[in-house]
Length: 97
Length: 378
Image (tube, rainbow over all chains, first blue to last red; front, side, top):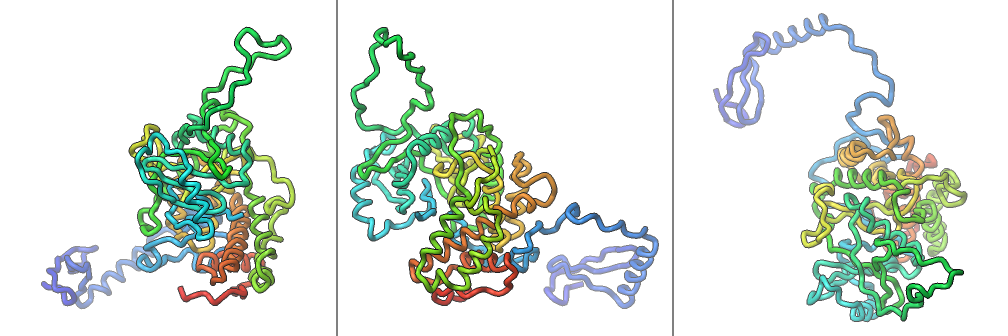
């Protein structure tokens, strides 16, 4: 089977008893009729069996995806900047007192 | 005084037009260093706080005219100390003009009322400073390759963190003293004074008022208005990306223990102080949006894993860094406004980010008017 998007060959994988096709090029996934419902059903069963999530850890001790920042900091802290926008060089300030 | 550092290996900039003649005369009169014989002199930086002239593998740094000679000499002795070899570039011995006839009496003829002269300390006996033709003092350094301002991906954040931690861990008592104090709060006060002295449209602008209001929220000691708490760590005093150089391959002192071959440079603000003021500069860049979260995280993690303590004990470094980072943001905002006013130009984006942060410190959410030409779009 060929990927409808990038035309690379697709390979079949078994996920929890559900056959899915994944493209070797763009990694896109093709589901046959009913396969999405099967996966959703499996997921909801797993959630019901799972123990309740642990309480949220105290602030300041959570593993932080983004570093702590002060309240006066620039807005948009903790968001990824585009890695192709302002990353090419530095402003002058990082090189002077 | 312009506080921009003029460090060996700093970004190349042409000499000021006004001082070009003086600089040319200075360069003509510089003694050709032994290591750089035959090399054409090249002016790497020329500012009121220092002139840097390269001769092939070595550079002269001609220090600011208002440098205190005793403190500068003490800072150079610290930089030359073996305990700093893994974090700071070492100065080279410099040729002095012919010495005056020695007043020291011949051995055996010393008066019993005078104690015998102390044996010369091999470090302090090595000449590291020499006067140059315009009366300023010069030091001599191996040339180091600076960080490229154009290649952000290559910036050595981990090395900066590791080198800073190593510097902070050098015990001050092990160094030739007295080690002068750093001048963090005094530099904040000086920048605010420059802003007060700027032309009126800028000095009285809402932006300037926001900077002064933000300064007023700082503890008095952090803006130089009261004695700072006693701290006794070795600090760099003027940390930024221009203060890193790659170990020069020709230097006999190149040390493989340095972080990936990088070393810190510039001793003009080196001294005893609170190490949080060093780490607070990149912290302020992160807080104001100049550093991405991952760049700051890399620097901070490297600093901590190399034993640096200025970030405090917990996960959150801001309890330790907040006051100095706010102080340095105020300093950068004040000095950016003053420089832009003097040049009649708009604020650069980074300077604007510092002013905006000052406004937020006092609860003002919008960018205040600067009294300067409009900023170009980013």
